Image (cartoon, rainbow, N blue to C red; front, side, top):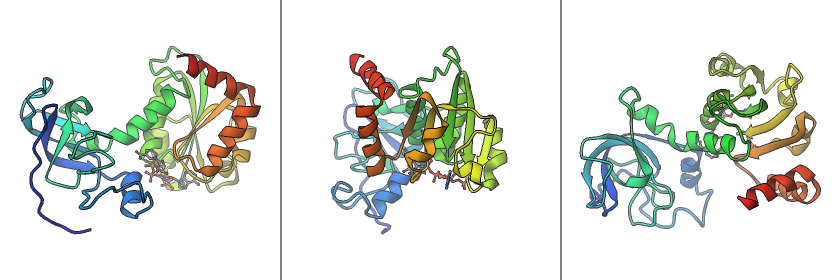
Length: 269
Ligand SMILES: NC(=O)c1ccc[n+]([C@@H]2O[C@H](COP(=O)([O-])OP(=O)(O)OC[C@H]3O[C@@H](n4cnc5c(N)ncnc54)[C@H](OP(=O)(O)O)[C@@H]3O)[C@@H](O)[C@H]2O)c1
């Protein structure tokens, strides 16, 4: 990586120009940096890494309605097809200024720091989407009681998943390293397992819960480890699916009644 001077970008009609205060580095960012996503990303050089950030609006495009200059913001703009910034294709967060689409930019409450806000976006949204859509947890607590397992619960996505799951009507079992057990308990997890113990490696709930959904934030755990711990309609939501997870999904979709019925339900929406 080189430190270079680049021009301050100009916002298009539906964009805001941010003076950046904070950005976060997510796994996708170091994976791009290491070249693990070649030939898809980066599509061109120079490439400014990172896509989540917090900053101050210093210029707005002519169609921008929600923001005035000097509002404090957090922004995320994935997949915006512009020669701009803050998307996986163009990156842009490790700079002093970046433009973001208005629709993907939100005001930051005063009690949330720029760094806290920048750390929330992709990781928090990933946890939210996993819980609300496939796991069908109602975050207002009005849904049926569910048992949820969160793996890697001390990590970026996992620690949001635990807190969001506890807003719903859930019992949460979590795995993490021994050093983070107290931290994950403080987030509200009902049971916390050290992944290095035999019970933790087997994902076994100490109180014998069978999981209705697993928010799986670790990689490399085989289906055979999940299967004995799942309820009859249990789902594993793998946020980093590899070839093996996709193969298991395809086989289960063909052979397993509850995977088929869930897919049909989704298809009808
Ligand atoms: N961050 C995102 O926005 C995002 C979005 C989509 C997908 N993903 C993917 O999701 C995965 C996790 O990302 P992240 O940002 O949450 O990671 P992270 O912040 O780097 O955290 C990884 C966590 O894994 C835990 N861990 C290590 N070995 C474990 C094991 N055997 N069992 C259970 N936990 C274990 C570590 O726990 P201890 O420190 O307690 O040992 C650590 O907290 C990555 O593969 C990433 O590519 C991330």
